[in-house]
Length: 261
Image 1: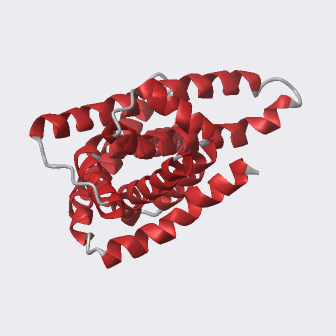
Image 2: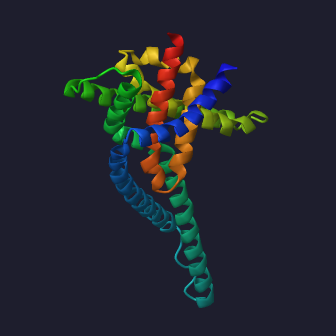
Image 3: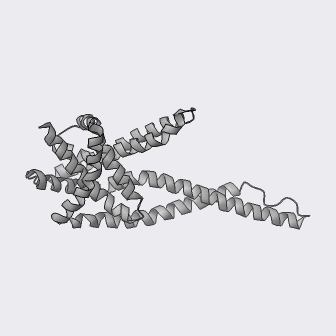
C-alpha cells in the first residue's frame, strides 16, 4: 500500500537526514535554530507565565474579599479559599496558554527558520541531484516569502479543521476519532511545509504542490509526525527539528519525484 510505504519513507528519512548531515558536514545550519530556540524558550515561558498570572488576578478580583467583618475566623477561611482559587486558576490558565503556545510554536519555528531552511533544502538538492542553484537574493527572498505564506496557509487550514473536528467531537461515537484526526492533520501540514521548498525550485505553484502532497500524503504525515515528536524535547527539539525534518523532507520528496520520472 502506497500510503504505508510513503509514511515509512517520511519517518525513516530522518535517519538518512542525520547521516547525510554528518557526511556532508552541514552542522553549521544548526546554529541559527539554536539562537532562535534560546529566544523562543525564554520568551514563551515568560509570556505564558505572565499572561496566566494576569488573567488569574482579573478573575479573583471579581471575588469578594471578605464575608463579614464580625467573623474573623470566617474571613480567614475565605482568604485561604481565595488564595487556593487564585493558585488553581493561575496554573490552569498558564497550562492552557502554554499548551496553545506549544501547538503553534512549530509554525513559529517554520516561519522564523524559513531563511535557513530554504538554503539548507537547496544545498541538499544540489548534493543529491548535482544541479547547481546559483545564489540570487531575489529568488532567495521569494523562496523565504513563499515558505512563510505556505506556513500561514497551513495554520489557517489546520485551525479550520481543528474547529470542525472539535464540533464533531461532541457527537456520540464520533468523538473518539477526533484526537487521531487532529494529529494526522497537523502532521500533514507540517510535512507539506517541508516538501514545498523542493516544489518551489521546480517552479511549481502552491496548488500544484498541494496536489502532489495529497497524492504522497504518507510522506508528509511521516515527516510531520517526527518533526512534532522531536519538537516536544525541551529546548533541544527546537534546534534539531527544523534542520533534520527539512533535510528528511527534501530527500524523500526528491526520491518521490524521481519515481515519477
